[in-house]
Length: 203
Ligand code: SF4
Image 1 (cartoon, rainbow, N blue to C red):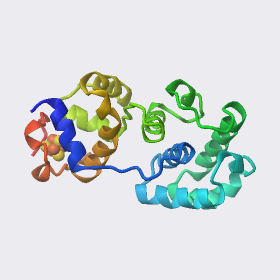
Image 2: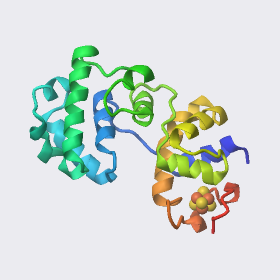
Image 3: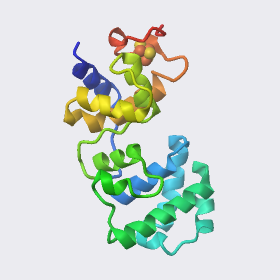
Image 4: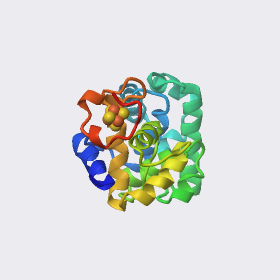
């Protein structure tokens, strides 16, 4: 099976729907999600946006005002500082709107390629390939690339996959990585792409 077909099988078996598309909420939720479990990120994001739904409202908040709200997502002091900094820049430099280019998104504090690419795809429907540890690990196990870090994987996958799969492969591979192709003890016995995995450690 061609690599593209394998990618489509992952997307079909592990569909990921993004209900929230508002660029500011997607951006801030991605910041909150760093080193946090999905369910905790969701609780923190809901609590935060109930009180501060926009960068303009967050501008008036102090870091301490956010602590209790976002505590479930962990690293709450660092994340509160970052969220307020990002809000200030969006209001003052980008007229209150989240920018829709990679270059501009990367100027925001704490926003790396993964976060920027998630915003570009989910909120602006642009072809953008976000690579986190799951996407990096699985792509290497499958033998699609031999890379040392997520950034290298992003560039390798962009050459291998057609643009229309760049966005969807991220969410689906993350789901696949959390449920089947786990970092340790992957569940190879239920893997829908077992035959196409080149990892020597597969069981
Ligand atoms: Fe991951 Fe195992 Fe499937 Fe390979 S066979 S992709 S290691 S779950």
